[in-house]
Image (cartoon, rainbow, N blue to C red):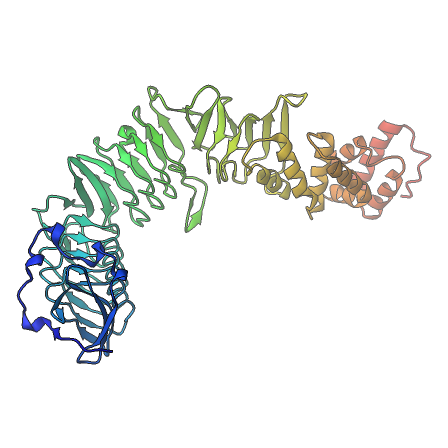
Length: 569
């Protein structure tokens, strides 16, 4: 390892001319590919080791440093080359490192450069222009960062997960990345903010609630909510857009008032805000992105006449990382003059052409849902976890069902599927709530189409392996009575299974007082002259006189005199 001529900060070397030149001319390792330069090494006087390279403009970039102790002073020059940048992961992960002295004329701190170190404070050089992506990420002990007055760029997550208690954004800053101060100790809301922006900054400002706004030309954007204790916010008048993930997983937010100027809410803007129940003045929105309010507790949503785009799962409120619950959204109101969207009995539907509409979401708890005939697509999560509906009526020309589109809650007990392929004009699915049969039929509706043949094949396949004898028997009886699209294999398995377990099935029917089951088994000739005596005898031995009497009446009504049958009671 070689040694080089080093110059440290205390010598106060004159500021190189290119640092004071225009931004386009300034040196930065991140406008260049450092891998194309020779990687050099040296050892500092304190035993610390450095890897560095000399960039094309003659400046030095420190690529990696291995401190010899809990502190390191990085040189401002190496062999006469000014150190203007720290490379990616330069000091990453040195958690025992508590003090770092940066070069006086440093321009750029690279991605993850000091991430995971144990530093408690950092003096940012006067010349510093750029703090890149997650440069100080996970510096859990970092409480103070002295301001760099010419700072221009703060990358995403730059001070994320630090103990930083305050920060001043100078007028020169033109870029603040997403989550730059996430999970830090800064407070951005009145009355006692510790995070502030120079009032002369032309690009950024804060409101009294702790929301960060960005000016893009003539447009105002809410970039991110910095204050995590805010429970209600009235977004600033003039704001036109709420940016992606602006309020993502905000744990305290309950109420949002939108300004009349707001037209766009981007994807995931309010995703997983589990306490958010009220968002008012949504009528002026033109676009709501994917998952915008997913996992919130939104109760009502009004679609105005200008809404043109509503993203996937934008209004699905039934699931978040910490809970799976029935959706909170119970009311959707759509302006009558909206040319794209309309609502029918709680269903929000998008017009796409003749008999080609798309059902986006259901809001309500009516006992019966009748899907309009014009609907051909069910969006993901449209009915997921919905509780209340008992009966669903739809048609078989629905060609697409998104993920969990029909994944109803536990109350649904009957599905009626209109189909021209059936003599009766419909296929009917009935099942007791909370049973394996219900789960089997529901599971078959998770497919990507509403195809009655595929639905019945899937449901039959699920139920053939059912281990609950009563549920299996009642399902088999229903399918043999209504053999829509039943396969020969399934029909044989069900018929033979009922015959083989006739005594056991009848005993369970008797114990549950399910007398209709005996009638059904006789209609299917599962109970017949050959086995009815054995069945009645078994029921008598098990002390079920009501069932015995019922079976004898059925036998008498169907076959006449029963004296030739030895019931052996």
